[in-house]
View (tube, rainbow, N blue to C red):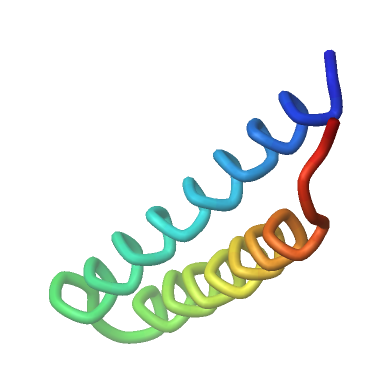
Length: 65
């Protein structure tokens, strides 16, 4: 697998984490209550940060051959 294809799959994982975070944050705010909402929110914000780090890495790594 070439470096460009690997970067593509890594960016898809990052975008998936961002979408997962968005869904979990909305779900925890409007559907869950108590400590379960807190646990889901913590997981959502962690996936948001990790997805953002992946996307920032892919963007600033530059073009490939």
